[in-house]
Length: 54
Image (cartoon, rainbow, N blue to C red; front, side, top):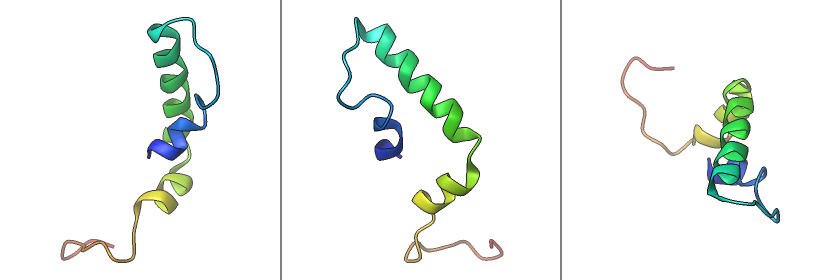
């Protein structure tokens, strides 16, 4: 997940930690609305799945 979050903060200057955290929060809110993007970055073909899950 960090590469996706890092897109919002990489190579940018922030006045303080609060400004950085606000940028990270805004990016996370965008990511929460894009389930397909999250799925592509988190569902690995080699990751064991529980019985009964798709």
